[in-house]
Length: 374
Image (cartoon, rainbow, N blue to C red):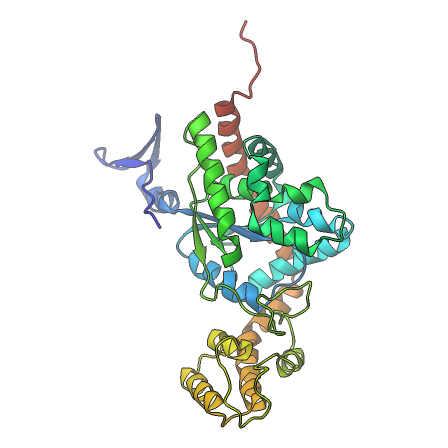
């Protein structure tokens, strides 16, 4: 990751006054205000988000949320609920999207994301997202969309569905989401890395044509790049149903873990087992803080001296211990929906100010002003 050098300097020659200088703009502020202003300016910005298609699960936590919690202390974070993009393949499910928006915010609050430290926003509450997406689509070659691996896999998954133009262009919408707040860093899952490269390419195309406006963002992958599904599939997926939700109660967690896929070559508890590629042990690594216990289970599993039942029971205990404080906070916020609504309304209003400033610059650079001087 490159170090961001702010385009601001401080003139401390005059006692009692600090002066910001930024590309021809001089602003003076009393000394008592300088610390917070300086701090906000020097922070790099992050944009990351999720489509509201349901509650969040353990895969979201280790692949994204865990990073976000830490990053909100170090960066100016914009956490986006991409409801426009959910319409691409859920246009007839508006009530479900509405519920999912609330569930996403509840999950964010429950894991420790703080709207006082970061910005929660809903995509459709900031219409500049759609405007920038349209303009960037004029710079995006169709072949670039055809080569996008995420779009390819989604098209295959929905091969029997009549897909809309909006579905095909959602990668451009994602690019606009990142560039609109001028994000420097984008925390993503491993499968989204090609998309960040696409974003960098479009930012480069815009800057080369119209002048420097957008930073080329870097990517950041979570501690566990991809958490396997409970059925052994390569990735947790709500559509498949192989997930453990952050809001699942302890009995549901127990039921899901006891039915988890393990090692198909192991017929008896006394057979030597495989740890690699075994989702139960991947979950132990991700959620069991007792490293001594995890290492002991792995050693005995390989030797054939521990059964799947004991390994799963230990995992049930670890996962429920991890989820208990998250459940408690979720219950608290479920009883304060006014606060949940305020989080997204206030955050979206704040994000729109940033978006309007960016779009003013974009329109000026592109020459989208047709007033005739008389």
